[in-house]
Image 1: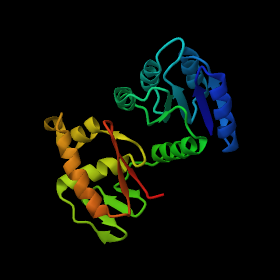
Image 2: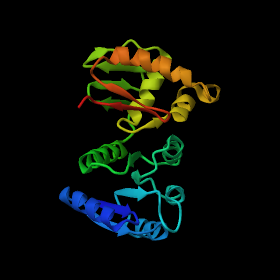
Image 3: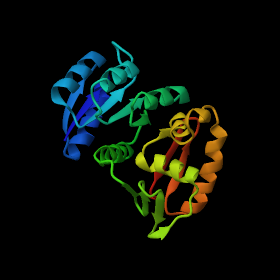
Image 4: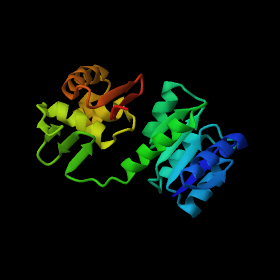
Length: 220
């Protein structure tokens, strides 16, 4: 497994390299965006850790350029914690977003989640812990028991389950579940999140990331 760190702070790169190598990664480094894109093209890493505040180009532009030819999982690392920045990063293809300063334990856990999701093939069934969703039959089971879901609840939960562990933005959920008529109707999400939380009980968690979106998680 190869990880590429694109960050201009040498101290951050050293910290990340130690943490990643302790988990068996081979680590490549780049201190600016253009070099980062070159390294990504040459080494084809299994995951990219990308800072947004790079000296030569904005990290979002690096992400956009990378997404033109690669689906590699990307974890954003940034001191920027504004909601609009996080939403922009996620909508341009980032798999997750961690705000500096961060704990290495949390960062490594998030890396594991996004890589596991990335390597899961699209099949008629989606499994997240005790939840199994049969996409072809539009049926779901929780701990082996059938769930009573409306078509809209099924579509909402399926969208979260497809990206389990990852933040799914409000806009993405609205478009996947309600189509173009869902644009701007964020109250739909609050209503259906309440319904699904009741039906999932304590078996799975739907976490609200305020102003950004939602993610489906197994209880820790």
